[in-house]
Every structure is written in structure tokens, then in C-alpha cells.
Image (cartoon, rainbow, N blue to C red; front, side, top):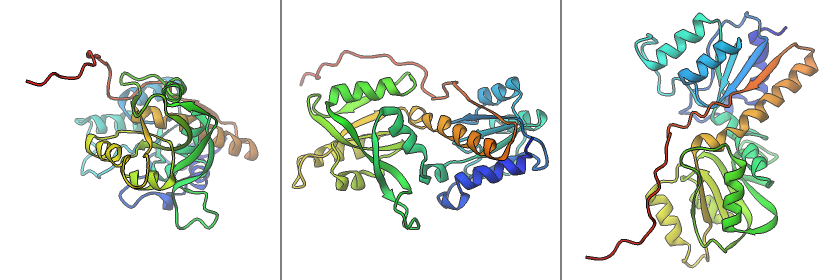
Length: 288
């Protein structure tokens, strides 16, 4: 059986912490490097329900995409929900490790897993990492569909490929527009509109699109550069969840190469914060 330090070294080889953004908080949050690891649970969010799943399954290590403490703290007291999660993990002898923007940058990484779930062929990064001489790493991916689809059918394909959430998938664009070349970015992606437009794609699949950036991107579609991309906006959690299976398979391959006895599991808990959707009649408001 490997020690925690062995598994962390393997994860750091797959997702080197130096690839993380300067503002990020990745790596080992709690755990004794000398402890043995037999079971590893992968999840997007280190929320209490996931922590309790790790305890119930008998996990020795919880690997999450999102950090527990992103902006730092002066206390891990169990009086806060984050402190409670930390205390639960430590009492159960479960380590917590985070791979966030370093997993976004990896090849393959979060956006590769998103593209794969949708059935897209990856051509290269949307925002290349300047430190990668091969030009394969970076944030987001530029992809292609095997055959063009109308936007309505493509959006339905995205919705069917991702785990169900209350908010589903929002779409901006002509439903009959043919979609062939696609940009994807797992997680919040409305800071990459300039790169998306420069890539000349037909559609952009991401999450957390805010009103103003999306509105401006839509208005720019009729500008001198020609039609801009259709927008397909899914839930943040859903666009990052496919990476968990990829990461688990990668760690399993490392374990097999080293002869480790190691079991992995992907959490199926929906930790998207939105829990219900109340549709309203879609009629244009009348002028008064």
C-alpha cells in the first residue's frame, strides 16, 4: 500500500502545483504524509456532504477540484462550515488534497474531460500556457464536432452529456445555426471571450456567464469581424465533474505501474448550489 506522500507525489506529477494561478490554493490541506492510503475519493467541492461520503466509504484521501480555503484563514475551528469539514476529515484520518487551476492547465485536464464528455475532438488550448514548448497545455480547449449540428441539437447534446442540474443549460444564438468548431472551458469562462472570438469558433461551452460579458459578446457578433459564437452556458459544477473520472483513471494507472493496492471512487453527489428551477412563460414584455 502506498503512503500518502507517494500518492501526493503522483498527483503532483499529473497536476504540478507550479501550473496553478498565483491566487489559487492547491496541494495538501490536511493529512499525515506517513499514513497509508487505500481508498481515494474524487469530488468537485469539499462540502460537508462530500466529506461525510468520504467517511462513510472509508476513504483515506479526498481529492477535490475546488479549494476548501481559497483566501486563507486564521482559524479552522468547527464553529464554521469549513472548519467543521476540516475537523471531520482529520478525526476520520482522511487527507484532503486540491488540484484546481493546475488541473485546468494540464494536458489532459478539466477542459479535455469536458470536451470528451460532449464527444468533441480537441485541437489545442484556447489560452495556451506560454511555458509549454509543445503548445498543448493551457486553459480551455478548441475542438471540433465529428459532423456539424444545428445549435439546438448541439445544446441538447451538451445537456445530455453532463450530469443533470436544476439550472440545466442556457443557450444564446440562432437554434438553426450550424455548429462545427467549438471552444470549451470548464468552470467560469466569461473572461475568455476575446480568445474565443479570435479562435473563430461557432459555439462556446462554459459556465457562469454573466449578463454584461454575454450581452457584449452577443452584440459584437454582428461587428466587422463577422458572426460571433453561440453561447452554451452550463452549471459550473457540471462542466468540471467529468474531470473527476479522468483524474481517477490517471491515478489508477500510476497505481498499477507501481503495484499499489489502491481503489478510487468518483462522488456522484450533486454539489451545485442551485437546487430548483421554476420556469416562467417566455413572452416578450409588452410596452406601457
